[in-house]
Image (tube, rainbow, N blue to C red; front, side, top):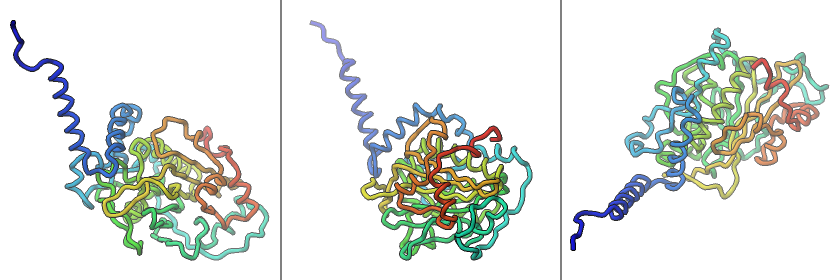
Length: 357
C-alpha cells in the first residue's frame, strides 16, 4: 500500500495555528491588559477606514503603545495624541493671529445681582478662580500658567482640568516638535509617568488638548504633563473625542472666548494600568463649555463612553447637572445661583450647533 510522505494539510494547519498562537502570546506578554491590547489591535484593523481622515493628522498619530519598540522610548517619545487635523482647517476660518490676553483674577461683587447679560457678565467672571469647579480644603490643586487641575492621587490623574480658550489661540497653529510627556513637577504626591502607559493598549489621552494652546510653546508643553493625561481607547481618543475638541475650537473662534472644564468620570473599582503607578482606566469622559460673550450666557455639556463611536456629537449632549451627579463635582459655583441653576439644568443645543458652524 502506498503512503503519501510529508505533512498532511490538517497537520500543517495545526502547526501554523500553533506558531501564530505562540507569536501572539510572546507579543502581548508583559502588557498590563493583554486581552484589551489584542482586542484594540484587532478593532483598529477593521475600523481604520472609519477614521481615514486621521491618517494625515499630525496631532492624532497612534500612541506608541502597541509595539515592542516602546521599550526603546521613555520620556523621549514625541507626543502624539489629541492633535487635530483641523488645526489648519481652523486657521482657514480666520487667518489672523494674535497674542492672547491673560486677564488677572480679581475679586468682584457678590452673587445677588440680577440675571446677567453680555453687558454685565464681566462683573462675576472677574471673580477670582471664576471658571474653576468648587475646591475643597484637602484638594490637591495644580495651577499651571494656562490650565488648573485637581489631581486625584488614588486614580493617578486629574478629575477636572479647567481653562479659558480664546479665539486667537483656537485660530493659531504651533508645531508640536519637541513636546514630550513628562511627570508633573507640581504634583507633590508624584504624578503618573510616561512608562506607566507603555504597551498598556491605551492612548495617552489629553484632557486639556494641546491643540487649544497654539500661542506659547511653554503653555503647550504644560498639556503634556502626565497630570493632564488619562488612559483612552485609541479609537475614542483619535475619533469622537478628537471631533469634540475640534468643535470646541470652532466655537472659540466664533465666540472669541470659552470657559472649559473637562475630565474623566472617576469611581472606585475601575481597572488599572501602570508599571510604577496604578492608573484608573475611566469608562466615561465629560466636557463642558460656558460662553459669556453672546447676548445671553449659555452652557453645554457632553458625556462620552471611552470607546469608539460614529454617532453625531449632539447624541452626547447632557445637562451639566447630570455630569455633576456622576462626578460629585460642582461646576461654575461662582455663577449667580439663579443663572447657574438655569444653565446647568439645560440640554439645549441652541446657540451652539448652528448654521454658522
